[in-house]
Each structure stands twice: as structure tokens, then as C-alpha cells.
Amino acid sequence: MLLPFSLAGSFEMTPDARQLAADVRWGIQRAGLTLDQAAREMGLEPSQLTRQLAHRDHAHLSLLRLARLPCGFWKEFIAIRAVRCGQRVLDDDIADLVTNLRTLLQDTKRRPIKMALQPETEQEPKTCTQR
Image 1 (tube, one colour):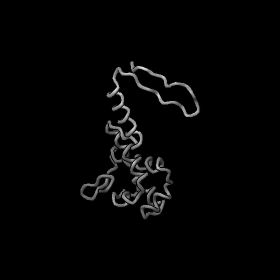
Image 2 (cartoon, rainbow, N blue to C red):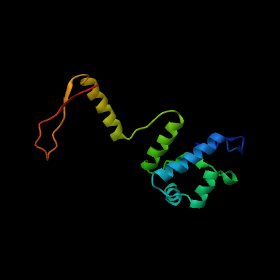
Image 3 (cartoon, rainbow, N blue to C red):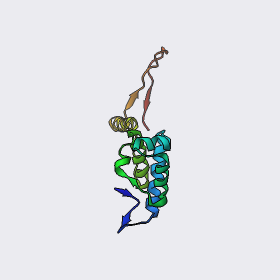
Image 4 (cartoon, rainbow, N blue to C red):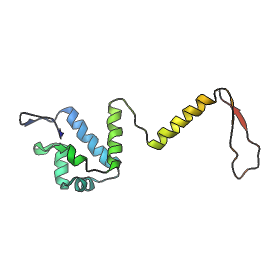
């Protein structure tokens, strides 16, 4: 896959392609990489990656080169693109917590929940009722 879209040998940087290139740059930054580090991971010179992201001189991004970036980039990039499509991607730990909380709330509707004692206290467990 090449970005931006090419047709019959001519290249046009469409608004969608510009947004996609900006999202790649943002994903790189959010993954804690510099453009220089990302370029090296992709087997490019930093100036070449900069040209590709700007679509200067008809330079384009290669999906095969992007695939060389670490998983941290892909987690961030996928989350960024998901938001653009009206979706959310949660970190696995957060997703598990949300799932467990939903299950707990469904299982305990209007029933008392025993709260755990803090190790340093000698108090009796408190009981609370969901509202």
C-alpha cells in the first residue's frame, strides 16, 4: 500500500492522505519515538521520512516500511485512526477492568457489596448498597 493515492503515474496529496500522514507522525510521537528513530526502524534516512510525511517531491509512505515500526507505534496509530472512525481502542488492562466492573455491577444489582479491609486497619468491613 502506498500513501498518498496514486493513479496513472500521477500523485495527488488528498486531504485524507494528509490526515493519514499526520496520524503516522502523531503515532510515532505518542509511541515515544523520534522521527530519526522511526526512520532508522523503517530502513530510511530521517530526511527521506520527513519528505514522505510531507509528500515532498512525490515521496510516499510504504506500508511495508511502516510494518517495521515497533508495536508501540501500532497501538498508538490504531487508536488514533479508530477515533477518526468514531471508535475507541482501550488498553488491554483498562478493557479488562471495564469488563470486570460491568460484570460485577450486573451480578450485584441492588445487593450489598462487602468492601475489603485495608491491611493497616482493624475496622469491620463496611457494607454499601448500589444506587
